[in-house]
Length: 356
Image 1 (spheres, rainbow, N blue to C red):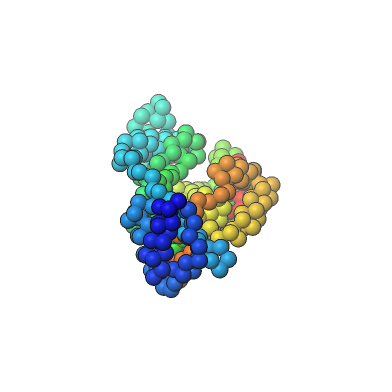
Image 2 (spheres, rainbow, N blue to C red):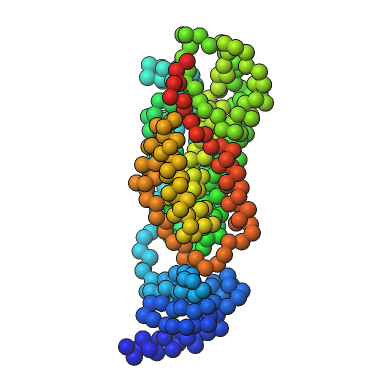
């Protein structure tokens, strides 16, 4: 008890230049951090970390709370990329397989038919990889420990993959960093998907609709519809646009971008919403899940995404610093993310009657 009292006195003396201290407890200091806020938060964080304490900053009413405790020893070694490489190679194979079959190839009978799947496989891997590398590089720039991308090979007859993800292995330092890490993936993925889509539409053709020629109808986002009209301003009756595999990969890239930017749970949009709205995001979460359920009446796939969102969890891990407000740059990035969501969102990605 005496040691704790001495510690509290020491904390009060050392930190009084950064914060007007009101109370000091076993693991909590409350008070009002002086301006400049971000600079003093960083100074307090460094003070505790130099003494092997972990520290969190919260705001409660007009008070700033500093929660601290003994830091856990870092025992985990550097992760090896062997699993990432194996999953990447497997995903290249499954996307090659799907791309080949959808081009009329039969790689099971003629292995070299896999070559037909290269345009689709290369394009979708490029888009998904760029998305995750955007997260990874920005996380590292913000001092956040993150893994390399894990691709998910799935023998789905249309896409051959369920996407990719990275794991965040350390706490996000603040809400500004949370926005930057959250936006980086969709923004980079979108910027790659855009030229891929343009090239793919350039390679696409008009074909007559016949009973012998079955196809899958796809919904269009605002952006994909606009780009399609640039290349196919007039589609005669009895004809339809036959998307080149590269264009289909671009369509998927837009779709994946929109899904990730939905502002709920552990999705990229959920990270951004948490940083921008804080506790008010809970209202938005209820609204978004309700909208997904309603959209499921028109495309049952939304039921799957609503359930998946609930399974992944609606709660969001707190950043280390919840006190420092968002900067102007981060607010603009959040607005850019919202604009990209509006441009790429499709309420009905695949109409129920898809066979023509």
